[in-house]
Length: 231
Length: 253
Image (cartoon, rainbow over all chains, first blue to last red; front, side, top):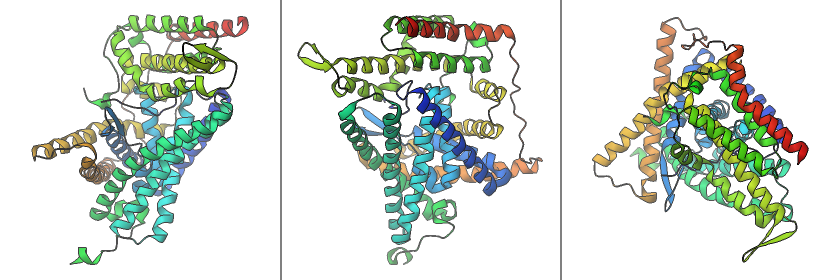
């Protein structure tokens, strides 16, 4: 089993850019705390804690990508679909901080960059895609599955695009090869996103069938039953 | 040991006994020093590596363990290997390869700094228990609400991870033979079940807390102890040395 990490290490992105993104991340996480607390009051700590524990467990599940390489979920879209973007981003942030301090995964100086990409950008783009897709798609199991799949793919690619942007702002000067590098990074993440999408869609539809009230993206309305299911 | 316990290796070395808050500050300072070092100062990186190796020896952390944990940064090594071919600049010949010189430096820069960064973080992770890290962060005025959520998450992650493992075993015991992509469906459904169980547990835990008079503030179960001047100076010796090396390398490079 190989634990591939996507967390940015030391000095891939220069100091000023890291600092700017750390500031942005602090503001975003602060906003997440305020909004989540408004929805959950004093329930915030136990519910967010348990939800974070769940994201942790989801990331522990390794699935094989290719021979010898296994990947795990990033969980941004999963958290956003089930918990909403604010609480979802908050939970993924906690996971990233734990990984940096307790697992040496990702540099402490790059925490802001990693939080922006994997928590804030991933959760909010993922949630946006689900909400938009559910306006077009039928509110059935299949429709929700497709919406969540698309959301997971977009969220993973958006997170990697966040890295490409940070690298463009404060990374190595690579001149004309930048386009090729960006294409390689985004292309790899489309593949990762498809894997993430399959698992995320399966998990969210499984929850939606049993407890539709727990899927934040459905906003309290259960799925419509298809003719076959209601017989 | 459960994978949730972090990389803590119990022990009683001088590094273990340092207060967690000083170790966290030292890690941040050390990482900044590494990041600020000019890439051409190869000797400075060697000095950092020796310094960290000394800390590992002091903390009785075996080098094999450190090397196996260093693999976490491997995806970025691909980027480091790509730099020599991507960055523009005067070309140099390495056997049959023609690569750019600034690109080689860029690749070296990424490789050296990422590896040293992971090693520095491993010193903290290997010598500080989770409760200690949380106490240290609280001492450093990290927002209480985030610490409470983190404490809850770590406590219950043991349970959720055990649940996922247990469900996988249950599937295997029923002659499921998960291979390649075909396991995705079962995996996803068990995740869904674990989410429902976690959320319901969260509500039960909240009710139990409310019944015991919880009003939104949590008495943290780890009282963070203050650190004296001796502790601070001992812990900051390594980053101070590193900062000195970085400054020296920057001025005389």
